[in-house]
Image 1 (cartoon, rainbow, N blue to C red):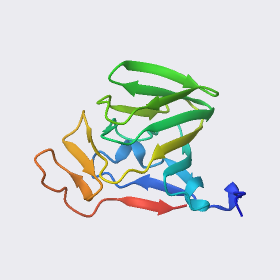
Image 2: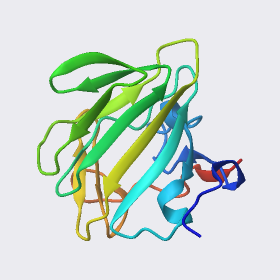
Image 3: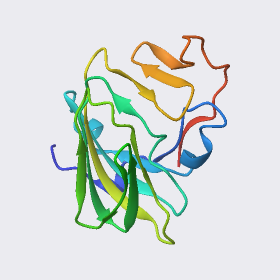
Length: 159
């Protein structure tokens, strides 16, 4: 059935970033809405960012487009263009291939809720401009010189 019972979906928490880059994202939570109905061409996630949490480290994608709509609360969009507050009802998008590192940070006292949509493109890769870290579809996060970060990483858990 195409109707999604959001509350019945498992809620995931955390990140696979290596330490110490994992810290601001450890309390990030989400439900995979697109996966619940078998979507394969793009992902749709309902993301909750408690106070102090980040959506990710600042990053960009080689191919994948991303879109975010703030449903509740406020977040600060941090990008190469500077900082901008996004309030409930506001949205932002990021075109694949544009080297504009971006992330969302909840600097408020209330949990923010976001609808996040992203393409699923084989071969997508990217960088974290503030860190010695790159990513690709072929495996774990790596240093810019191509060497892997040591295992284990904290990982994603189901709430």
